[in-house]
Length: 123
Image 1 (tube, helix red, strand yellow):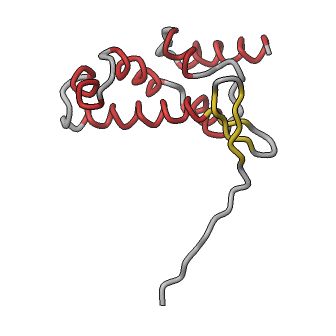
Image 2 (tube, rainbow, N blue to C red):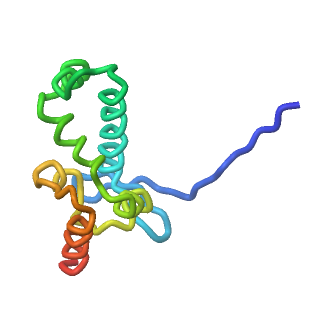
């Protein structure tokens, strides 16, 4: 006999300006940012395994502007604790996908943490 498990998460989808966010009792999850992170890791996997040869190939296959995959794949360089903040929805409110796409990201994790700290201080 097959047992079926079900998980219930009390989340709501809401709009914050033009952004769609997931809201639970404590945190606000930026859906677009989470989708961007997920796509970035998927695309990086395609490159690492040789399925795709470049970001331009990914853009052609997905019907995107050639710069989009490379801009988003910078998200794979984020420090694990920053990604955890994004997944938990506890990132600073102004830290969104638009910010990541239009600002260069340092590879050094301590420098990334300083950027996040500045966002938190400005809030």
